[in-house]
Length: 240
Ligand SMILES: NC(=O)c1ccc[n+]([C@@H]2O[C@H](COP(=O)([O-])OP(=O)(O)OC[C@H]3O[C@@H](n4cnc5c(N)ncnc54)[C@H](OP(=O)(O)O)[C@@H]3O)[C@@H](O)[C@H]2O)c1
Image (tube, rainbow, N blue to C red; front, side, top):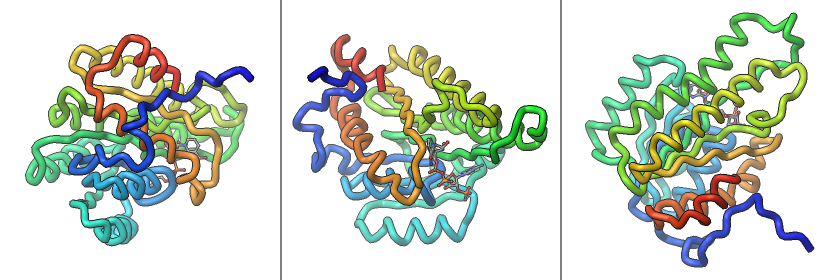
């Protein structure tokens, strides 16, 4: 049977159950539900400290309480990733307590109702682009001064980053753009030893997101464990 090349080969010491994320710190946007929350739960189970970001304070506080039970440092910060000032104030709060960030996961994202381009409102277009593309840029730009060799950035993109679907123009444009940003970032940060990963999940119910994203955890662990990687390893990972 032909072997799939879509998934990276994970060394045995970075497989599920590895404790290499213990004591690391991750900032996750969109961390109060869906994929972001599922990743937060998975990282918490590995002993990774968390900074949770989203807008809704009530859901943030619920997520913070739940994750704090894992005996890891958890800080929930309300932030609108579309807003430069909001992002700056979140990072001001981060810098007061932490001096280093090991993992950044950009998962905050929105979609829009199925609409033809003719029906698409300018406001819908702007909101989707501002959240999915500009938000990823703003958060990453502020996070980078806290990141160093061996750190990892994971951008939660979509199948829509590579494949266009009708009636989803703003979402598709935002995700194609976010993949371009991710690829440019990867080239820019390669010499600094900061990993940049594009995760392209397919359509799913967010309630079952954990099952879909669980494979990301050993990938993140791999990056934290191996700050330097051979050329062939890098090639495999770029296919994610
Ligand atoms: N679910 C899918 O089928 C699917 C498939 C492929 C890719 N994706 C991508 O995966 C990512 C997560 O999707 P999901 O299904 O987990 O979404 P979700 O369940 O709707 O959760 C979105 C999260 O993002 C936060 N968020 C939204 N706008 C924000 C903003 N302006 N500033 C800060 N936080 C914001 C939300 O909290 P607040 O509302 O409180 O801010 C929430 O925590 C998105 O980028 C999405 O495009 C999803």
